[in-house]
Length: 92
View 1 (tube, rainbow, N blue to C red):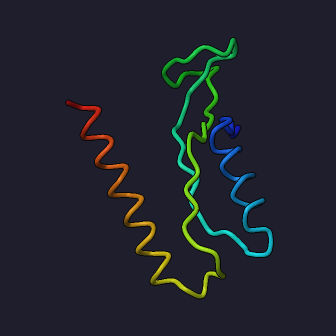
View 2 (view 1 turned 30 degrees about the vertical axis):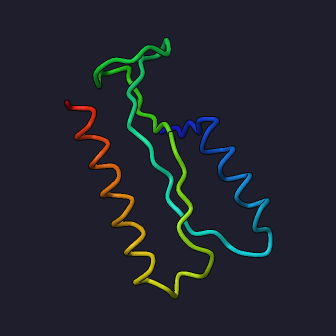
């Protein structure tokens, strides 16, 4: 399995870390599964296919350790709701 990091999430990560250099950042990387054949074309899973994850967005949630589990859980719920809303809009 390979991980492909798109330009947008990479820039978000770098800029956010540069803006808050003294604070740790806890966040979420959003991606999708991609199946590619040996020639780089997309296809269904097959004998010569390998899976890959394409990271398409980065969402920073908080600047603290993981000791704030309730705040992290609320942030993750908000991210999930936003993604569900985007999926519903795409289906229309």
